[in-house]
Amino acid sequence: MQNTKIDDDHSGNNDYIKKEDICNKLSIFENNQKMSCRLSKSLGVAPMLDVTTQHFLQLCRIISPNFLLYTEMIHCNAIIHHANDLSQLLGPPFPDTVIQLGGSDPEAMSQAAVILARNGWRDININIGCPSSKVQHNNFGAILMKSPDLVARIVTAMAEVNQHDDISPITISVKCRVGVDDIDSYEQLYHFISTVSKTNFVNHFIIHARKCWLKGLSPAQNRTIPKLDYERVYRLANDFPNLLFTINGGIDNIDKVVEQLEKVDGVMIGRKDFYGIPPKPDLEIINEYIDYLSAHLASLTASKLSTLSLSILLKPIFMIFSGSKGKCFRRHLQLNIIKYRKSNSFESNFDNDNINNYTLKLVDDIRSFVKQSISDAELEHENKKNQSQ
Image 1: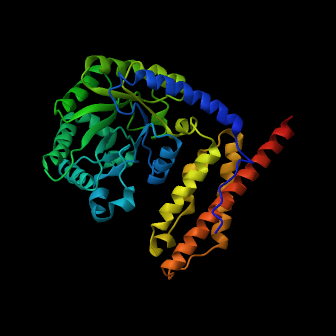
Image 2: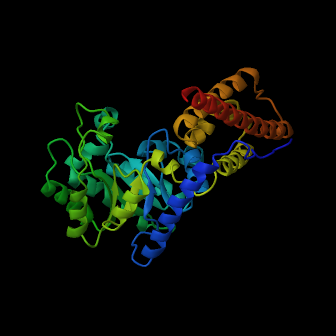
Image 3: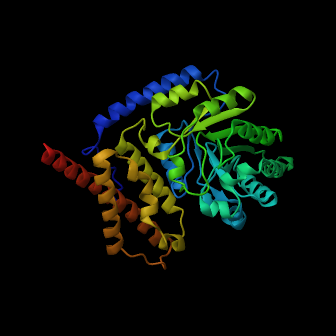
Protein backbone atom coordinates (compact mmCIF):
# COMPACT_ATOMS: atom_id res chain seq x y z
CA MET A 1 0.00 0.00 0.00
CA GLN A 2 1.14 3.53 -0.74
CA ASN A 3 0.25 5.14 2.59
CA THR A 4 1.30 8.49 1.07
CA LYS A 5 0.83 11.78 2.85
CA ILE A 6 -1.52 14.45 1.60
CA ASP A 7 0.78 17.04 0.02
CA ASP A 8 0.51 20.79 0.35
CA ASP A 9 -0.58 21.55 -3.21
CA HIS A 10 -3.91 22.70 -1.81
CA SER A 11 -2.81 24.13 1.52
CA GLY A 12 -4.03 27.20 3.35
CA ASN A 13 -0.59 28.75 3.91
CA ASN A 14 -1.90 32.31 4.14
CA ASP A 15 -4.31 31.22 6.85
CA TYR A 16 -1.45 29.45 8.62
CA ILE A 17 0.61 32.65 8.82
CA LYS A 18 -2.25 34.40 10.62
CA LYS A 19 -2.78 31.47 12.99
CA GLU A 20 0.95 31.25 13.70
CA ASP A 21 1.04 34.93 14.71
CA ILE A 22 -1.86 34.34 17.09
CA CYS A 23 -0.21 31.29 18.62
CA ASN A 24 3.10 33.10 19.04
CA LYS A 25 1.27 35.82 20.94
CA LEU A 26 -0.38 33.24 23.21
CA SER A 27 2.91 31.37 23.70
CA ILE A 28 4.69 34.55 24.82
CA PHE A 29 1.89 35.28 27.29
CA GLU A 30 1.93 31.74 28.68
CA ASN A 31 5.70 31.80 29.15
CA ASN A 32 5.39 35.03 31.13
CA GLN A 33 2.66 33.52 33.31
CA LYS A 34 4.27 30.16 34.09
CA MET A 35 5.58 31.20 37.48
CA SER A 36 2.19 32.49 38.68
CA CYS A 37 -0.16 30.00 37.02
CA ARG A 38 -1.80 27.71 39.59
CA LEU A 39 -3.11 25.24 37.01
CA SER A 40 -0.80 22.93 35.09
CA LYS A 41 -2.71 23.92 31.91
CA SER A 42 -4.61 27.19 31.98
CA LEU A 43 -6.47 26.60 28.70
CA GLY A 44 -9.18 23.99 28.32
CA VAL A 45 -11.43 22.75 25.52
CA ALA A 46 -15.07 22.58 26.62
CA PRO A 47 -16.88 19.24 26.77
CA MET A 48 -19.67 18.81 24.23
CA LEU A 49 -21.96 15.85 23.62
CA ASP A 50 -21.18 13.95 20.40
CA VAL A 51 -18.25 16.29 19.71
CA THR A 52 -15.46 15.78 22.26
CA THR A 53 -15.16 12.08 21.51
CA GLN A 54 -11.91 10.15 21.87
CA HIS A 55 -11.18 10.86 18.19
CA PHE A 56 -11.77 14.59 18.51
CA LEU A 57 -9.58 14.71 21.62
CA GLN A 58 -6.77 13.02 19.71
CA LEU A 59 -7.05 15.71 17.03
CA CYS A 60 -6.77 18.30 19.82
CA ARG A 61 -3.53 16.69 21.00
CA ILE A 62 -2.20 16.82 17.45
CA ILE A 63 -3.10 20.50 17.10
CA SER A 64 -1.52 21.48 20.42
CA PRO A 65 -0.27 19.71 23.57
CA ASN A 66 -1.01 22.76 25.71
CA PHE A 67 -4.74 22.30 26.32
CA LEU A 68 -6.60 20.50 29.06
CA LEU A 69 -9.19 18.31 27.35
CA TYR A 70 -12.60 17.21 28.57
CA THR A 71 -14.57 14.22 27.33
CA GLU A 72 -18.21 14.55 26.40
CA MET A 73 -20.42 14.02 29.42
CA ILE A 74 -20.70 10.33 30.35
CA HIS A 75 -23.40 9.20 32.76
CA CYS A 76 -22.10 7.25 35.75
CA ASN A 77 -24.33 4.29 34.80
CA ALA A 78 -22.59 4.06 31.41
CA ILE A 79 -19.24 3.77 33.18
CA ILE A 80 -20.60 1.04 35.44
CA HIS A 81 -22.16 -0.82 32.50
CA HIS A 82 -18.88 -0.70 30.50
CA ALA A 83 -16.62 -1.48 33.44
CA ASN A 84 -15.06 -4.44 31.63
CA ASP A 85 -14.52 -2.68 28.29
CA LEU A 86 -14.04 0.95 29.27
CA SER A 87 -11.47 1.59 26.53
CA GLN A 88 -14.17 0.99 23.91
CA LEU A 89 -16.23 3.78 25.48
CA LEU A 90 -13.49 6.27 26.32
CA GLY A 91 -10.31 5.18 24.60
CA PRO A 92 -7.09 4.92 26.62
CA PRO A 93 -6.49 7.32 29.54
CA PHE A 94 -4.35 10.39 28.91
CA PRO A 95 -2.88 12.72 31.56
CA ASP A 96 -4.21 15.77 29.67
CA THR A 97 -7.81 14.50 29.65
CA VAL A 98 -10.58 14.94 32.21
CA ILE A 99 -13.61 12.65 32.30
CA GLN A 100 -16.80 14.67 32.60
CA LEU A 101 -19.24 12.61 34.64
CA GLY A 102 -22.98 13.07 35.01
CA GLY A 103 -25.27 11.66 37.69
CA SER A 104 -27.04 12.45 40.94
CA ASP A 105 -26.80 9.24 42.95
CA PRO A 106 -23.79 9.46 45.31
CA GLU A 107 -23.33 5.68 45.43
CA ALA A 108 -23.37 5.26 41.63
CA MET A 109 -21.06 8.25 41.15
CA SER A 110 -18.67 6.74 43.69
CA GLN A 111 -18.77 3.37 41.94
CA ALA A 112 -18.04 5.04 38.59
CA ALA A 113 -15.13 6.95 40.13
CA VAL A 114 -13.58 3.70 41.40
CA ILE A 115 -13.91 2.10 37.95
CA LEU A 116 -12.34 5.11 36.24
CA ALA A 117 -9.47 5.22 38.74
CA ARG A 118 -8.77 1.49 38.35
CA ASN A 119 -8.57 2.06 34.58
CA GLY A 120 -5.98 4.82 34.87
CA TRP A 121 -8.12 7.97 34.79
CA ARG A 122 -7.00 10.56 37.32
CA ASP A 123 -9.23 13.62 36.78
CA ILE A 124 -13.03 13.70 36.97
CA ASN A 125 -15.25 16.71 36.39
CA ILE A 126 -18.86 16.68 37.61
CA ASN A 127 -21.37 18.21 35.21
CA ILE A 128 -23.57 20.69 37.10
CA GLY A 129 -24.19 22.88 34.06
CA CYS A 130 -26.11 20.97 31.37
CA PRO A 131 -29.67 22.33 31.02
CA SER A 132 -31.14 19.78 28.57
CA SER A 133 -34.62 18.44 29.33
CA LYS A 134 -33.43 14.82 29.29
CA VAL A 135 -30.71 15.59 31.83
CA GLN A 136 -33.17 17.52 34.00
CA HIS A 137 -35.61 14.61 33.92
CA ASN A 138 -32.90 12.37 35.36
CA ASN A 139 -32.06 14.95 38.02
CA PHE A 140 -28.49 15.78 37.08
CA GLY A 141 -26.71 18.59 35.28
CA ALA A 142 -27.64 22.22 35.94
CA ILE A 143 -30.67 21.32 38.07
CA LEU A 144 -28.22 20.15 40.77
CA MET A 145 -27.26 23.80 41.38
CA LYS A 146 -30.55 23.90 43.27
CA SER A 147 -29.27 21.16 45.61
CA PRO A 148 -25.78 22.12 46.83
CA ASP A 149 -25.97 19.70 49.77
CA LEU A 150 -26.59 16.79 47.39
CA VAL A 151 -23.63 17.87 45.25
CA ALA A 152 -21.48 17.92 48.38
CA ARG A 153 -22.60 14.36 49.21
CA ILE A 154 -21.78 13.25 45.65
CA VAL A 155 -18.29 14.78 45.89
CA THR A 156 -17.68 13.20 49.29
CA ALA A 157 -18.79 9.77 48.06
CA MET A 158 -16.57 10.01 44.97
CA ALA A 159 -13.57 11.08 47.04
CA GLU A 160 -13.73 7.81 48.96
CA VAL A 161 -11.83 6.27 46.05
CA ASN A 162 -8.74 7.96 47.47
CA GLN A 163 -8.97 5.74 50.54
CA HIS A 164 -8.12 2.66 48.44
CA ASP A 165 -4.44 1.84 48.87
CA ASP A 166 -4.35 0.01 45.52
CA ILE A 167 -5.70 2.94 43.46
CA SER A 168 -3.88 6.13 42.55
CA PRO A 169 -5.72 9.20 43.87
CA ILE A 170 -8.11 11.17 41.69
CA THR A 171 -8.88 14.88 41.55
CA ILE A 172 -12.46 16.13 41.34
CA SER A 173 -13.63 19.40 39.80
CA VAL A 174 -17.08 20.88 39.20
CA LYS A 175 -18.45 22.67 36.11
CA CYS A 176 -21.50 24.82 36.79
CA ARG A 177 -23.30 28.02 35.80
CA VAL A 178 -23.50 31.40 37.54
CA GLY A 179 -27.17 30.65 38.19
CA VAL A 180 -30.16 28.55 37.22
CA ASP A 181 -33.76 29.76 36.79
CA ASP A 182 -34.57 32.14 39.66
CA ILE A 183 -31.63 30.93 41.74
CA ASP A 184 -29.37 33.55 40.22
CA SER A 185 -28.17 35.94 42.92
CA TYR A 186 -24.51 36.18 43.80
CA GLU A 187 -25.33 35.14 47.36
CA GLN A 188 -26.88 31.88 46.10
CA LEU A 189 -23.89 31.19 43.85
CA TYR A 190 -21.55 31.93 46.77
CA HIS A 191 -23.51 29.47 48.93
CA PHE A 192 -23.21 26.75 46.26
CA ILE A 193 -19.42 27.18 45.91
CA SER A 194 -18.96 27.40 49.67
CA THR A 195 -21.04 24.28 50.38
CA VAL A 196 -19.26 22.14 47.79
CA SER A 197 -15.76 23.39 48.56
CA LYS A 198 -16.17 22.81 52.31
CA THR A 199 -15.99 19.08 51.59
CA ASN A 200 -12.26 19.75 51.02
CA PHE A 201 -12.41 17.43 48.00
CA VAL A 202 -12.98 20.08 45.28
CA ASN A 203 -10.82 23.14 44.79
CA HIS A 204 -11.35 23.77 41.06
CA PHE A 205 -14.58 25.17 39.62
CA ILE A 206 -15.21 25.75 35.92
CA ILE A 207 -17.86 28.46 35.70
CA HIS A 208 -19.96 29.07 32.59
CA ALA A 209 -20.53 32.81 33.00
CA ARG A 210 -24.19 32.57 31.96
CA LYS A 211 -27.17 31.48 34.00
CA CYS A 212 -29.46 28.96 32.35
CA TRP A 213 -33.19 28.54 32.09
CA LEU A 214 -34.34 24.96 32.49
CA LYS A 215 -37.63 25.67 30.76
CA GLY A 216 -38.17 27.82 27.68
CA LEU A 217 -34.65 27.70 26.26
CA SER A 218 -32.88 24.87 24.43
CA PRO A 219 -29.31 23.88 25.37
CA ALA A 220 -28.05 25.81 22.32
CA GLN A 221 -30.04 28.91 23.32
CA ASN A 222 -28.71 28.61 26.87
CA ARG A 223 -25.21 28.99 25.42
CA THR A 224 -26.03 32.33 23.79
CA ILE A 225 -29.19 34.06 25.06
CA PRO A 226 -28.58 34.57 28.82
CA LYS A 227 -26.23 37.49 29.30
CA LEU A 228 -22.61 36.86 30.18
CA ASP A 229 -21.65 37.90 33.70
CA TYR A 230 -17.87 37.73 33.91
CA GLU A 231 -17.80 40.05 36.92
CA ARG A 232 -19.59 37.43 38.99
CA VAL A 233 -16.82 34.92 38.25
CA TYR A 234 -14.13 37.49 39.08
CA ARG A 235 -15.90 38.13 42.37
CA LEU A 236 -15.83 34.43 43.20
CA ALA A 237 -12.09 34.35 42.49
CA ASN A 238 -11.64 37.28 44.86
CA ASP A 239 -13.88 35.85 47.60
CA PHE A 240 -12.37 32.35 47.43
CA PRO A 241 -8.63 32.98 46.96
CA ASN A 242 -7.72 29.41 47.90
CA LEU A 243 -9.87 27.94 45.11
CA LEU A 244 -9.13 27.70 41.39
CA PHE A 245 -11.55 29.20 38.88
CA THR A 246 -11.72 28.61 35.14
CA ILE A 247 -14.06 30.85 33.16
CA ASN A 248 -16.17 29.69 30.20
CA GLY A 249 -18.53 31.40 27.77
CA GLY A 250 -18.12 33.85 24.89
CA ILE A 251 -14.31 33.72 24.84
CA ASP A 252 -13.71 33.35 21.13
CA ASN A 253 -10.30 34.88 20.39
CA ILE A 254 -6.82 34.99 21.84
CA ASP A 255 -7.08 38.61 23.00
CA LYS A 256 -10.03 37.62 25.20
CA VAL A 257 -8.10 34.61 26.51
CA VAL A 258 -5.17 36.81 27.48
CA GLU A 259 -7.49 39.28 29.18
CA GLN A 260 -9.28 36.59 31.18
CA LEU A 261 -6.10 34.88 32.35
CA GLU A 262 -5.14 38.10 34.10
CA LYS A 263 -8.21 37.72 36.32
CA VAL A 264 -8.86 33.98 36.75
CA ASP A 265 -6.79 30.80 36.79
CA GLY A 266 -8.02 29.25 33.57
CA VAL A 267 -10.06 29.73 30.41
CA MET A 268 -12.27 27.16 28.68
CA ILE A 269 -12.99 27.69 24.99
CA GLY A 270 -15.40 26.00 22.57
CA ARG A 271 -14.42 23.58 19.84
CA LYS A 272 -15.00 26.14 17.04
CA ASP A 273 -12.63 28.59 18.72
CA PHE A 274 -10.07 25.83 19.26
CA TYR A 275 -10.01 25.04 15.54
CA GLY A 276 -9.09 28.64 14.85
CA ILE A 277 -5.65 28.56 16.48
CA PRO A 278 -3.74 25.46 15.31
CA PRO A 279 0.04 26.10 15.59
CA LYS A 280 0.87 24.02 12.51
CA PRO A 281 -0.35 23.85 8.89
CA ASP A 282 -3.78 22.35 8.29
CA LEU A 283 -2.51 19.55 6.05
CA GLU A 284 0.10 18.51 8.60
CA ILE A 285 -2.69 18.19 11.16
CA ILE A 286 -4.81 16.13 8.77
CA ASN A 287 -1.92 13.79 7.93
CA GLU A 288 -1.11 13.22 11.60
CA TYR A 289 -4.77 12.56 12.33
CA ILE A 290 -4.97 9.94 9.58
CA ASP A 291 -1.81 8.35 11.02
CA TYR A 292 -3.72 8.11 14.31
CA LEU A 293 -6.67 6.52 12.51
CA SER A 294 -4.32 3.97 10.99
CA ALA A 295 -3.17 2.84 14.45
CA HIS A 296 -6.72 2.93 15.79
CA LEU A 297 -8.10 0.81 12.94
CA ALA A 298 -5.28 -1.71 13.34
CA SER A 299 -6.40 -2.31 16.93
CA LEU A 300 -10.00 -3.19 16.02
CA THR A 301 -11.44 -6.67 15.68
CA ALA A 302 -13.39 -7.83 12.64
CA SER A 303 -16.70 -7.28 14.42
CA LYS A 304 -15.76 -3.70 15.33
CA LEU A 305 -14.57 -2.99 11.79
CA SER A 306 -17.84 -4.29 10.39
CA THR A 307 -19.79 -1.58 12.22
CA LEU A 308 -17.30 1.18 11.53
CA SER A 309 -18.63 4.68 10.78
CA LEU A 310 -16.32 6.72 8.59
CA SER A 311 -18.40 9.81 9.31
CA ILE A 312 -17.69 9.48 13.05
CA LEU A 313 -13.98 8.80 12.46
CA LEU A 314 -13.57 11.79 10.15
CA LYS A 315 -15.95 14.18 11.90
CA PRO A 316 -13.10 15.84 13.88
CA ILE A 317 -11.45 17.18 10.70
CA PHE A 318 -14.66 18.59 9.22
CA MET A 319 -13.95 21.99 10.84
CA ILE A 320 -10.24 22.20 9.98
CA PHE A 321 -10.87 24.77 7.22
CA SER A 322 -12.92 27.87 7.97
CA GLY A 323 -15.16 30.18 6.00
CA SER A 324 -16.38 29.45 2.47
CA LYS A 325 -13.53 27.01 1.86
CA GLY A 326 -14.52 25.12 5.01
CA LYS A 327 -18.13 24.80 3.91
CA CYS A 328 -17.01 23.46 0.52
CA PHE A 329 -14.62 20.99 2.16
CA ARG A 330 -17.23 19.64 4.57
CA ARG A 331 -19.73 19.12 1.75
CA HIS A 332 -17.25 17.37 -0.53
CA LEU A 333 -15.86 15.21 2.27
CA GLN A 334 -19.32 14.05 3.30
CA LEU A 335 -20.21 13.26 -0.33
CA ASN A 336 -16.97 11.30 -0.78
CA ILE A 337 -17.63 9.32 2.40
CA ILE A 338 -21.09 8.37 1.08
CA LYS A 339 -19.68 7.41 -2.32
CA TYR A 340 -16.96 5.32 -0.72
CA ARG A 341 -19.39 3.44 1.49
CA LYS A 342 -21.67 2.66 -1.45
CA SER A 343 -18.84 1.18 -3.50
CA ASN A 344 -16.95 -0.69 -0.73
CA SER A 345 -18.29 -3.52 1.40
CA PHE A 346 -16.76 -5.31 4.38
CA GLU A 347 -16.65 -9.05 4.92
CA SER A 348 -16.63 -9.97 8.59
CA ASN A 349 -15.05 -13.39 8.03
CA PHE A 350 -11.55 -12.04 7.33
CA ASP A 351 -8.63 -13.76 9.00
CA ASN A 352 -5.99 -11.62 10.71
CA ASP A 353 -3.86 -11.18 7.58
CA ASN A 354 -6.86 -10.09 5.56
CA ILE A 355 -7.92 -7.67 8.29
CA ASN A 356 -4.47 -6.08 8.20
CA ASN A 357 -4.66 -5.74 4.43
CA TYR A 358 -8.16 -4.30 4.68
CA THR A 359 -7.19 -1.66 7.25
CA LEU A 360 -4.09 -0.64 5.26
CA LYS A 361 -6.21 -0.22 2.14
CA LEU A 362 -8.87 1.66 4.09
CA VAL A 363 -6.31 4.15 5.41
CA ASP A 364 -4.92 4.70 1.89
CA ASP A 365 -8.45 5.20 0.60
CA ILE A 366 -9.18 7.70 3.37
CA ARG A 367 -6.09 9.70 2.46
CA SER A 368 -7.14 9.60 -1.17
CA PHE A 369 -10.68 10.87 -0.77
CA VAL A 370 -9.72 13.45 1.87
CA LYS A 371 -7.14 14.80 -0.57
CA GLN A 372 -9.75 14.81 -3.32
CA SER A 373 -12.17 16.65 -1.03
CA ILE A 374 -9.55 19.34 -0.36
CA SER A 375 -8.86 19.68 -4.09
CA ASP A 376 -12.57 19.89 -4.95
CA ALA A 377 -13.17 22.41 -2.17
CA GLU A 378 -10.28 24.61 -3.36
CA LEU A 379 -11.60 24.57 -6.92
CA GLU A 380 -15.18 25.35 -5.89
CA HIS A 381 -13.99 28.09 -3.53
CA GLU A 382 -11.91 29.75 -6.26
CA ASN A 383 -14.78 29.53 -8.76
CA LYS A 384 -17.11 31.23 -6.30
CA LYS A 385 -14.57 33.97 -5.68
CA ASN A 386 -14.14 34.56 -9.41
CA GLN A 387 -17.89 34.64 -9.99
CA SER A 388 -18.37 37.25 -7.27
CA GLN A 389 -15.79 39.60 -8.80
